[in-house]
Amino acid sequence: MLDLTLDKDVIEDKETIGGGGNSRIWESGVYDTIIEMVTIEESSGGATAVNVTLKSTDKDSKLFPIRDTFWITSGEAKGQKTFYVDIAGKKHPLPGYTSANRLCIATEGKTLTEVVPTGEKKTINAYSWEAKKEIPVEKYVLTSLIGKPVQIAVQLFKRNRQKPNASGVYEDTAEVFESNEIRYFANAETKLSVGEMADGVAEAKFMSEWDAKNKGTTIDKTNKNLQPAATAATSAKASVFA
Image 1 (cartoon, rainbow, N blue to C red):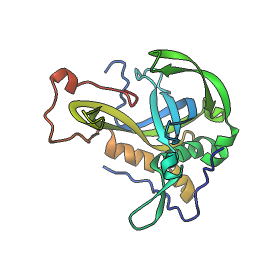
Image 2: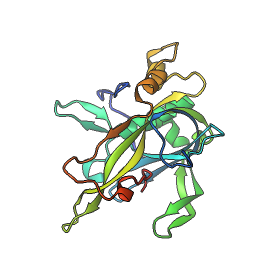
Image 3: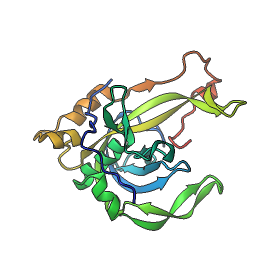
Image 4: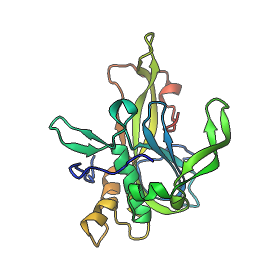
């Protein structure tokens, strides 16, 4: 089992408010959800990821489950670390580590390092790019999180789709797509965000304030030097796994 413990001198990130029919894309906002699946997988380069799938608790919602991937360690080439070092020489958790840790705290009241060892290998249905469909595969599942409610803050992004050039290097294309990222987590019952829980706050405010500022917004990360593709492609929407 990988050592996922953070060094004592790692500086954890703070929470910041920041700036129709069935849909795989969620508009920016705060949602009450249920965890459908959480797995831990390793990339070919040795980096470790936590893959999470959540569904809205709103029975009238026409949203498909939202999925996100949190990279909790770097690859073998970078030492499979849970942190990175900034230009000032200070350590910070990988953004994915922070997100996965917040997920565990919001739902279980336990850290990622406490939850991971309680997982187990299970055969589940997962999408196979080779088979082009879901097939039974063995995954390491964080079983204690399955079925747990959690409140999430979702941000919508607009980006350029990337494709490899003649040299095999991925670069931006004119095709634009939308994708989601889960930014923050809060306890489903108290509505306290993980940051508020850590600070001993009694009244939950962070998630409602984040929602008031970010609901319905889209962060545009597109390359302004590229001309938009045809209308059909420009308006295309894709999940984070597209």
